[in-house]
Image 1 (cartoon, rainbow, N blue to C red):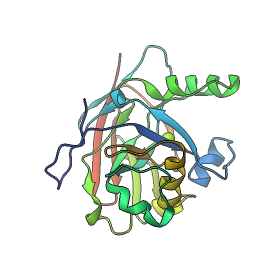
Image 2: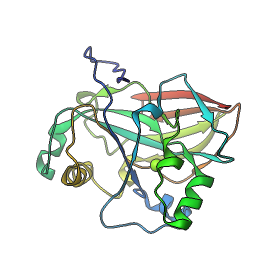
Image 3: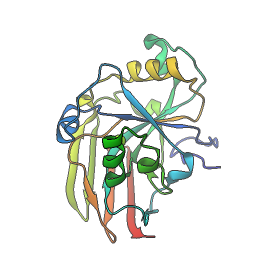
Image 4: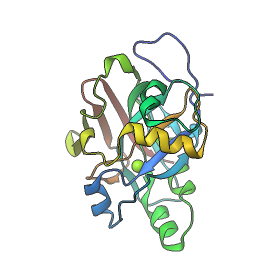
Length: 220
Ligand code: MG
């Protein structure tokens, strides 16, 4: 079982399901030649893909091309089904910065064939997360700088205010499909600038000045 590492909360909170959104930033949808949809696009990652700050992303033998996607993570603090938008933020416990590591070659083949993305997104180490911060420290979650550098060079840099959907809408929509529970994690999608990572790279992600994450990359 994996748990969050909170900077400011003493409780141990196990990580539940990881619900990821795709195409939530217009410029990223454009760079992928993908259309933005009216409802958010969802997929899941297993909790076994989690690694922490100072962990190592492993390039699996099955992939020749891993991509980085830096994303804001939203941690759920209480159970809810059919959550109304006006109550949605009551369900948030905190935030973190995460990487949605993607085997882009496997995903491209899946897209072409109409297959699910579970393999492309679900390998071990494909969900690095930072320590988490409680929501009281984050009055404006949709006005935070989100950035990723590789070996000190900026690759992705955006603001969460560029996201297409509000957090209220995201939480309400997901809870219409699946019950959200304490400890679930929503990865809210990546802005433009995604690209390949190589063995030996050092990735550093930041969410404002709240959360940071450093990981390196090795081959299996
Ligand atoms: Mg993503």
